[in-house]
Image (cartoon, rainbow, N blue to C red; front, side, top):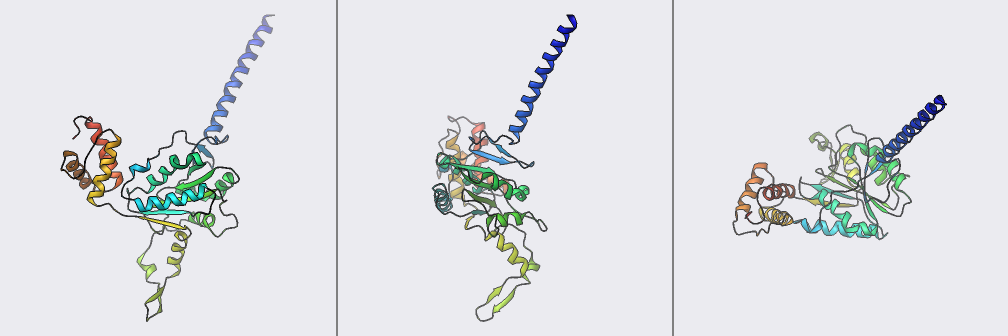
Length: 299
């Protein structure tokens, strides 16, 4: 009788351990995307080739983006067409660092999430997985933006060919519910060298028309596959201060521009120390200022 009781206790304990282990494995499968939580609004593509939900994605209100009204209007119009099921273009946002390129893409999520928009973040080094990713997304009712931030390729990096194929030129192109939005500091995404430009030749001496060398043509062909190009340029002083004021307002600090307040002088010094007047610099200054001063004594 005692042996029977002992065996039953052992069996109960083993069953309990097995249940715990199964629950742990289920959690791990969910963590790496084995069971995709399609109710999420944002996802990331992991290094192990699985889709993982992002429970609380970092977004940016559109009204906090200042000085890029033209770019904002163009990308909003393109995205609005996309979520409505109408034709739309893949987009390349290129230009100076910290000028709001990635913030603008992230701001699209709260704007269009109720219309079915979802964002999938893919790091540049995983672009080789794009065919697998779009196959996972194809056929679903949601509209997916595949987003690659700070995109660039080095010489000899062949992963850009997967991006070219999905953008255009492959039988396995992206389905109609998937668009690719990318940001980059480079217009053509690949490094350009003086020696490559020397391979260009004159086609018409009278008009000065030239034909690029093969290396340059290859690099241009990648960025040309994006139907929408949006350029971002460094901000002047007035735009920089206006952006800083908006970020301060988001922290509960009402800041007026143009009346030589202490925050303005320090904001300019902050930018000077970094050698950059950008939206990112303005946001970092506002965070520092708001952290050091209350709304009552900040000005």
